[in-house]
Image 1 (cartoon, rainbow, N blue to C red):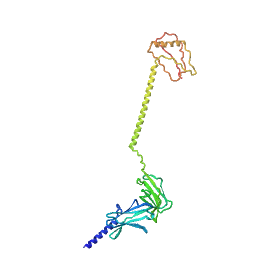
Image 2: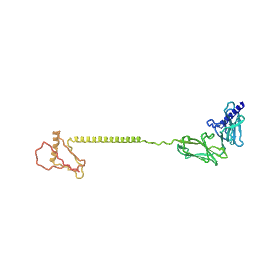
Image 3: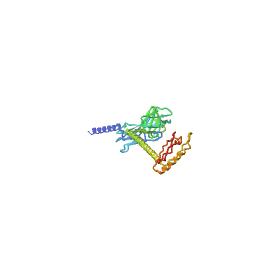
Image 4: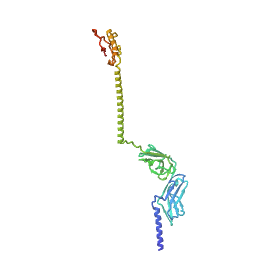
Amino acid sequence: MSAGFALLLGLVSALEQRIWAHSDSSSQPCIWAVPGAVIPQDGSVSIFCRAPPGVTTVRLHHEAPGGQWYDREPEGTQETVHFSLLDVKYFDAGIYSCEYFKGGDWSRCNESLELVVTGAYQDKPSLAAHPAAQVASGGTVTLRCQPLYSYDTYVLCRGGGASFPQDCSHQHHSSFLIAPVSLDQAGTYTCYGSHNHSPQQWSLPSDPLQLSVTRPAVPIVISASAAAAAFLLLVLLLLLLLLCLRRRRAKRRAACDGTKGHMRHSSSSPPVQVQGEDTGDGLQDAEPEADRQRDTQVPAAAAEDPQEVTYAQLHPTRLRAGVDPLPPRDPEPPSTQPCVYATLTLS
């Protein structure tokens, strides 16, 4: 009974170990590298293995022809085991995995680590953006990796710098099309080259390329209500302008009417003898003696009657003739009402 129970416990423990070793634990990987899985040649890297409970030995295995392995014994309840690789060379690149020894049996995690060493080839490619390194969100940009020598695979990495690149993509041609471009794709890019026989050995990194992504220009949209308000405002301004012009014209007209009325009232002053301009026909210089005597009676009569008003309306054109003499008449007794006769010829 006890022997069967012990055998059952052993089977359960072995099954638990196998399940843990082959389970997908993406949130807690069983192997990872710090500062990253892509390191420059002559650099250093730390590889960590997560050990299941009861493990007595943890082994880091380099899966390569003639590859090495490194064994560590966890201390107490230690869950992770640290392996340091110093002064890494190009031949240290490859696939690494963690293996565990417990109860006389070896098991391994289903995850593996691909360690990449850059600088295995001394060729340094160049990286350029077409049409430009600044592109609007939603646009299109092409990043071209141009090495001195041809490679089987071209690698484009974003972030992490040239020493420890991250977020890398692989393809067999040197032009990387990014379309449509999003805001989170902005950053620093580098490119590398590699060959199929040693895919974890990369060339020197290109110079970093800074890709800037801007927000698209927002079109200006004028709503119907805004357009109607602008139209009404324009109409009101035009009406106000017309009203101002109309008032100004009315003021000018009133001023002209006042000036004419003033001129009419001022015409009640004593008459002044007007001499026309000589236009070729000439004015008659001499007047009959009788007319002169009658003319001299006008100021006297006007002086006797202050209410007497004499009106004269002149055309704005030039006067061309003078005063014609009155025809001779028989002498009559003097009249109390003075009369003035003037003959004007208008041109």
